[in-house]
Length: 194
Image (cartoon, rainbow, N blue to C red):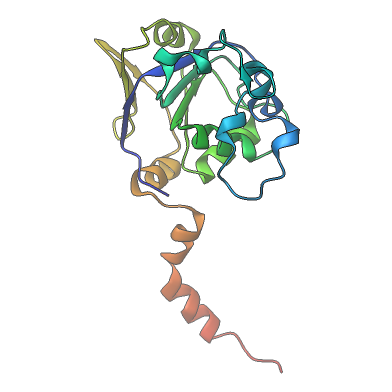
């Protein structure tokens, strides 16, 4: 995984509640076994009015919103089925973080395993972030655990282990490999019963 310390970007607000994983990436697009190629179908049912015909009213299709790396949304984001593809689709589209009021538990765990930052902020703070201009940027400062916009600083909580993983670009395998010497020592002392 790539380390994450700060993310400075424009935002895309989709201020709906209970956006489930089927709305994030519908089931018909789950056949791909790679973690790439999902971004074009992110929010498919909202984003297109017919196959390959973009809905001009949906925010992801607005020219002034292209390139945004931070999604701002409502409560209970990523609820529903456990598909990891939802995180893959958000990342493949270009998002690096999502700010919501709460997350589906499995979705949240999938974000931590895929190097995608999921931040919880209260509704009043998200409302401020959702109403900023399409050309304005916010900064997520992970080491100091703050979302910064102009004179606003919104603190957020994150598990210290996950924070360490994000800042150092570590996945579960990389963390396990930090114990390689201890694992090899243990394995060398396992009796052979052949």
